[in-house]
Amino acid sequence: MTVQDATQIESQSANGDFLLSVVVPMYNEEEGAKECVKRLKTVLDGMKCRYEILFVNDGSRDRTLEILKEVRIHEPNIKIVDLSRNFGHQLAITAGIDLAGGDAVIVIDGDLQDPPELFPALVAKWQEGFDVVHAKRRKREGETTFKLLTAKLYYRIIREIAQVDIPVDVGDFRLMSRRAVDGLKSLREQHRYVRGMVAWLGFNQGTVEYDRSARFAGETKYSLRRMISFSWIGLTSFSVVPLRLATFCGLISAVVGFFYAIYALIVKFYFHTAIIGWTSIVILILLLGGIQLICLGIIGEYVGKIYEEAKDRPLYLIKDVF
Image (cartoon, rainbow, N blue to C red; front, side, top):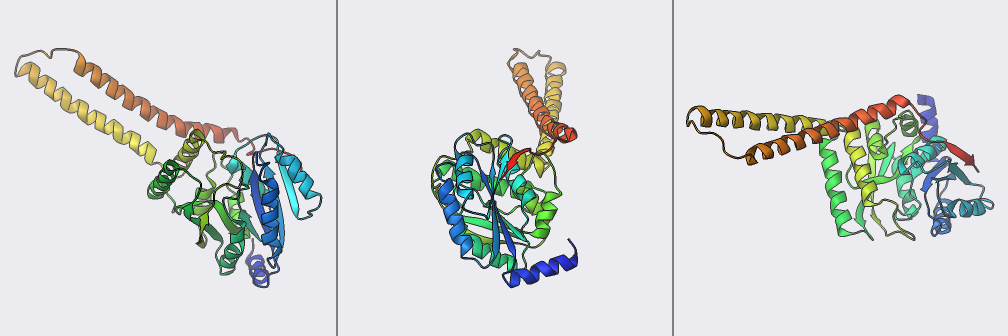
């Protein structure tokens, strides 16, 4: 984007003459699809701007796509991107952002935990000069104590060890300016942690706080296993601390082994007594073997990422666009 283009967009946004794109990833949300459309349109119709809503159907197995197609007949501002299969939440977001043509782009999930009513506040912050406006959660209703505690802990751990400043208590609900979107579109890595990638972009980044509601309908699509996998992607995508941890474990085991060897030599040559039993040997073998396997697993995770990137497959495939 040229300086002239940026200046023109700023002028249009100040006058309310701009296009706002809203990207909504959808996966098995048939129970709340109509309500989602209704609340999005209610908010957007009340804003002084042109808008488009891009629903990305991420391989839903229920009637989500059929419901969206029925609604779209009467709503010219709605576009539907139907992916060829389930590629995952982060790639569904990526597909929507790639196709969004707005001067500003908002990403919001279709489960209505994040309120569309926050759009005007996000846009106002953008019009102040921020390229990225994160929606920061004050409260999270409808979630277990375990999830709240682990999420709070995870956000603070990754902020401490990541190589970029990733804001805490922030998900994928945010607004991005056109130049931030163009920057994000240039990042084509396979294992995507979008909130970290957006933080990596830099630019002027601000926050708007809100209270997150419980799901309108249906169940969360993030099981404990998927949450752990997603968290690990974030940790390994934006930090080499796990690799350094493996090195640290190796150094500790080497130091312990060195002092234990000295102890064994003293016992043998000074006290002239043999080491009785095999318990200590078995413990050391299991300890060192476990540390080695952990370290190999961490290294293997990074090597696996290199392997996936080397294949250079497309991030997603689109079956239809309505």
